[in-house]
Amino acid sequence: MNPYLIAPGIRFNDHVFSEPRRLAEGALPRCGGLFVILVRDPNWAPKHFQPLCFQEFGNNSQDTLLNCHPIRWGRVADLDALFVSVLPMPFSSASQRCDVRNQLVWAYNPVYQTTGISTGQHELAHKLEQLEKKHEEQTTQLRLLLANINRMFEPQAEPHRRSIGFLAKPAA
View 1 (cartoon, rainbow, N blue to C red):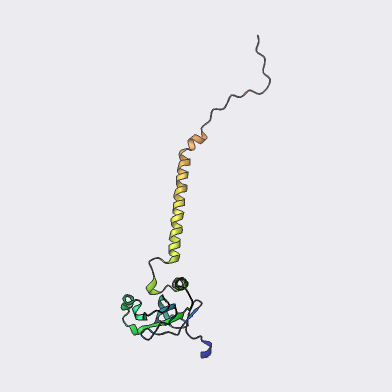
View 2 (view 1 turned 90 degrees about the vertical axis):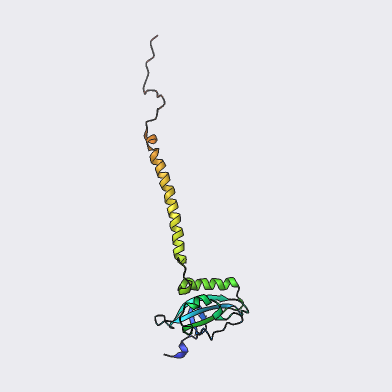
């Protein structure tokens, strides 16, 4: 395979991160951006790295990558097995970086950023709750209708009608 046809770095959605480096060797640029913690996984393609966590960092960040989430990385037995890729986003605001990070988390569902319910499942749960509320309202209306059905079909007293035809004059 021609090495010039392979883009340098690693691509997540439409964003090209830097080439993965060992976590201990990684450094954050002076501008804001995103970084992803990776682990080797032969099941991922075209590059054999699975994302564990997407995070953002601000402008002039003095944090090292190891200090970002020490509790989470303590679970991994060998820190040498972790890699990092950086996506510099100069002139970006914190909200723009947060939006890109949330899109990547939603698309790749990284291991260390899974919540009990994903966004799609949360939306479905909300829609189900709305449907149940609507169903309860309709059931209440139907019960009221059925309770009053006898009144609807009772014969109502009709006003006095004149009979059709000529009436004979009463004899005087």
